Image 1: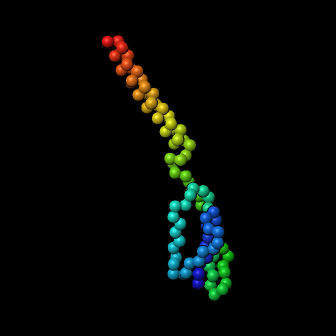
Image 2: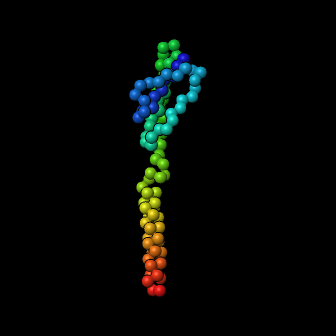
Image 3: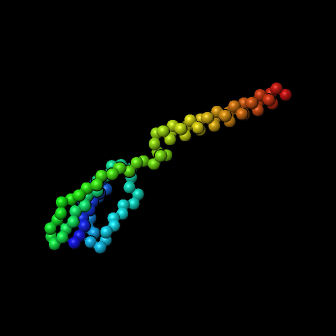
Amino acid sequence: MHYYYKLDGYDLNWNINNYESNQITYSALAPGNYTFYLKVENQGVFSEPVSYSFTIAAPFYVRWWFIVISIIIFLGIVFMVYRWQLNIQRKISAN
């Protein structure tokens, strides 16, 4: 008995596992939508494929809202440093 499996969006062909090897691992999949297909072969007879669809979301630091917040915080810090330096220069000029 063998398991045949593939992951649409990752595998081009069916992969084969023995019956004893009942674990399949995909490491470091990119964000996106995937469909996993599995079928069993027993003495030359194949079962109907079963499928499982899932989505891997992008990390939070790549999302638009995180980038916008980061830019706003950066600009806020730059503005505060500028104002601080400007106040120091005014105090020096006043003396």
